[in-house]
Length: 207
Length: 174
View 1 (cartoon, rainbow over the protein chains, first blue to last red):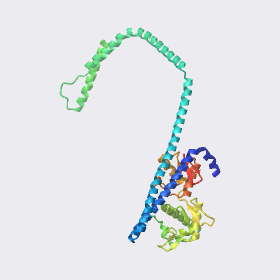
View 2: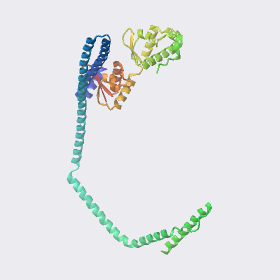
View 3: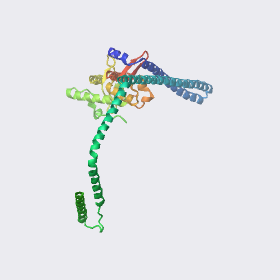
View 4: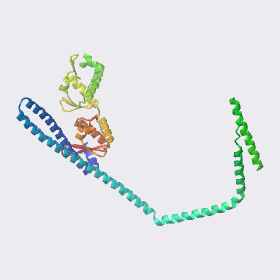
């Protein structure tokens, strides 16, 4: 089994990974050391208390001195651990930076290739041609529009007028009080609508 | 949360291997699930046949019954056949219990790793099973052999790679 994995390992684990692992291992060792010292400290504190109770002040003092020294050691290891961790983070971040650069490089290459396809002269030519085509189209539009508008303009205007007049006349608000019965109230606007429609038609005919 | 014993546990004949084949099979199945459940509840990973005879699983003091060493071995052998157990020595006195299969552990670990956004990072085995970061995760305190097996399972899936260094092992997740 080991052999199969061995081949793969070489391909995916980089030197940096190994370095990070080594740093982390070192950190783990320091953590273990911390745990050990902490346990020892607790034990010694208890022992010192007991010695004091038994009246052995000298020995208790000695123990406390030892404990103080170990406290200092603990601080030092804490510093070292944070050093190691910073190093690990730096390494990891450097790896990320490399990846970012790689990504930028790929993007850059791609852009370059695309620019090669798209030369400036080509773009200029295409833009010119487009401009020409637009002008041409405008000319056609003008020609067509010129021949049509004169005839239809009047008809369009007349139609517009008819519609606006009809609109003005449309709403006929009932002056009487609104009838109580729902049936009538429904009927009335219908009749009105019909009337106005008819009026509109008449006007259209007149026009 | 205390461990819930099955009804058979207070049933004296349960502690004697039954001669009838059918009954015996049922009995063994019950023993297997009891042993696994017990190990899961107490997070036990390594068992010793002699020691486990004294543990409450195989020794019910209330009804004064205990399973014999031979019977325990039979139960363990049954578990081995099911893939939940591996003997550590030829005499079959110590064994590794897998109440969760390596693949399942691997999945749990991988889930955690992706949750904390540490895919593509390197871990030491100690870090995974003992650091403060994994405190409260199910695989916290997992024994190293079990951890290694679950990582190997992840490795076959291509989700991790175990790195061996002169002192200790590490793993990188993908």
